[in-house]
Each structure stands twice: as C-alpha cells, then as structure tokens.
Image 1 (cartoon, rainbow, N blue to C red):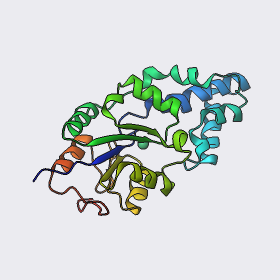
Image 2: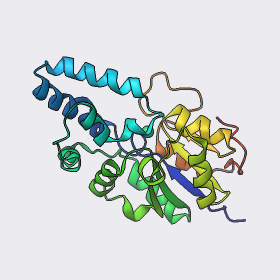
Image 3: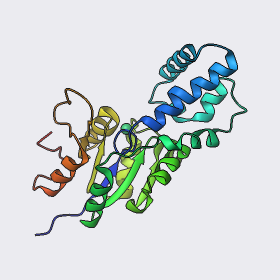
Image 4: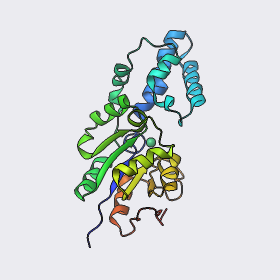
Length: 227
Ligand SMILES: [Mg+2]
C-alpha cells in the first residue's frame, strides 16, 4: 500500500530561514533609524523598540506591520519596502531545507508556506531563497488573511483549503504546535538551537522527513505518539 500524500505547511522564520533577516530589520535597522531621528544612543533606541514591540505583543497584527512601527516612531518618511529590501543579504536558509522540500515534493506531498510574516518580508525571503517552486501556496497569514497563527481561524482556514490530511511544522511552540494540535491538526515543533531541546521537538527537517517516511505518520485529528 502506498503512503498517503499529505498537505504539509511550513512556518518560515526560524523554521526554514534563520531569524537573522527579521532581526536585522527589527533589532538593528529600525533602532538605527530611531537613534538617528531622536539623537538617543543606538542601545537606548534598541531598548525603546524592544519595549514597544513587547507592549503590542506577537498575537497582534500590528507586531508584523512595519508601516505601523514607522508611524509609531515618527518615521513616516521612510519607504518601508526599500528599507526591508536593504536587508535582503541577511536572509539565510537552513542547510537542510532544500533537500527536504525537494524530497517531500517528489514523494507527492503538497507543500504550503504558512507564515505570520507580512508580505514585504515574506516576498524578500521567498525570492532570495528561490523557494517559490517548492510550494503550492505561499500565505502571509497577517497580510493575506488579516490573522495571526495564534487565532484558531487561521489554521481552520488553512485546513479548509488544504484538506483533512494536513500536517504543520514550525518553531513556535504555541503558534506552530499548541494551536494546530488543539484543532486536531498534527503539528511538529522544530527546535534547532535550543539546549536543552523541548521534549519531543525535532532537531532538524531531516528528522521531520524521516518521520513522514516512517509508518508512524499520524492520521488527521491525532497527535503523533512520538511527541
Ligand atoms: Mg517561526
């Protein structure tokens, strides 16, 4: 009996790409602009940014939207898209990504990129890493759907598009694991650099591929017994 083909959705930042690009925009670029405008030191500006981001929180759409933050810091004159583009050399793909995506695709699975990142960030990362050909759909949850993955409606909508045999993989314990699992979607946590690694988390996408190839692929609505 052949293996079932699945729809497999992937988070982007921290899962396929390192956080170097996003960090360079939020923790270097924006603080530098704020420091230049306000005269405060880079370190104070960075702290100001971090506190402002934390005040909004990652469950809010505003967290992901650069125009909001440019307005918040009085930097409306900055062209957000070219600003983001200026950091594109910082986009880095983890080494295991392309071989694993290629293998999964060859094995008949439909792959979906499912990220909270706003479109301008997502587009730069997808273009820089030439990821487009691997994916049947590329979804910016925040910009395309006006949702964040913490909102169950995001995964419910994904499931309605992808069908019942959906599996998700990502690096955020709540967004990429708890929320989809609470909706009966099997979800796998990838934790590449945490020491100690959370129990049941995968160290790489190679481990995810091995799981997908093993007999223990869970049916819809069940959580993986290995996790
Ligand atoms: Mg992530």
